[in-house]
Amino acid sequence: MYIFDNGKYKQDLFKKIKTKKNIKLINDKVTSLDINKNYLKTKKNNVCYDQAIMCLGVQSSLYYDITKSRSIFKDYKEIAVTGFIKHSERIENPRQYFLKDGPLAILPFNKSNFSFVWSLNKYLYIKNKIEIKKLIEKKISYLIKNKKKLNITNIQTYPIYLNLQNKYYKKNILILGEGLHSVHPIAGQGFNLVLRDIKTLFEVFKKNLNLGFILKNSFAFQEFYSKRKPENTMLGLGIDLTNSFFKQNKMLDPIKEQFIKNLKKYKSVEKLSKIISDKGLFDNY
Image 1: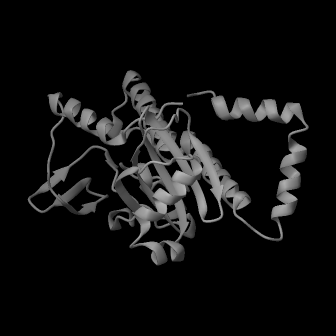
Image 2 (image 1 turned 180 degrees about the vertical axis):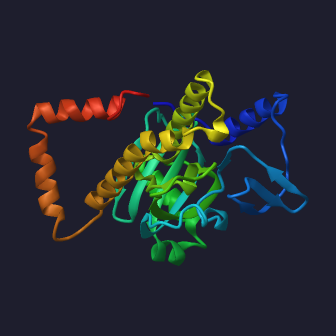
Image 3 (image 1 turned 45 degrees about the vertical axis):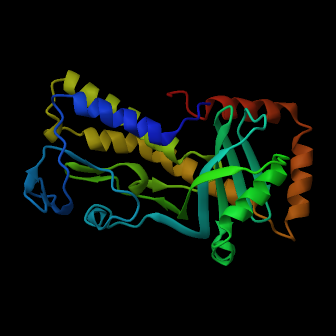
């Protein structure tokens, strides 16, 4: 497992893009697109394309013409609170806590810094919004047994949804990133899904070009869709099931506790779970 500062990764990526002579950067707002004529409209001009890949976040209105079909959608009514914490404790490995207030993950990316993701009930967050920094410090100090003041920075929040698109593309335009699939942060797999999508798309393009196909007239997006949709859907629903299982429920908690205790008795199940945790369900990556 590798954990890194996403901000530094993006800075490095943009530096490399700027050095590429065959990449042209246009800083302008896209106002509309014409899928049938293969061009998108910006404030300044129209840009023609052979193929376009849209990475516009979760709620862009530009997706509408592509994703008119139904998607798998669920509003968790939760807010993800994220940030960085500088500390002096010995924390080397990721930790996941299933708290009464909501699941909280600690993700160390060097010896003295870790990021956190805390999924809070929307109403609980609104109630504590003004004092959220104090609430975070109190909760995490208790969990890591810290007695010194924590340095908490870069606190950000966003609503949590499950959104798995049934349609990935239309003609020569493809959706990529969070617009394609948004999952609960409990398993930390959202960004990993995007990386797998990018890897598969690269391989599909490379294969088509090596066969002499012009990408504009190839079936590259259909092949990408066939390769990625099953895993994206299965993993998204699996994460949703995991989140539902660990949510506190007075009636079901005793049954779940007993189930987990009995599960430990079966060594084969424990061995299988470790293999899946280490390598994943798919051996392509």
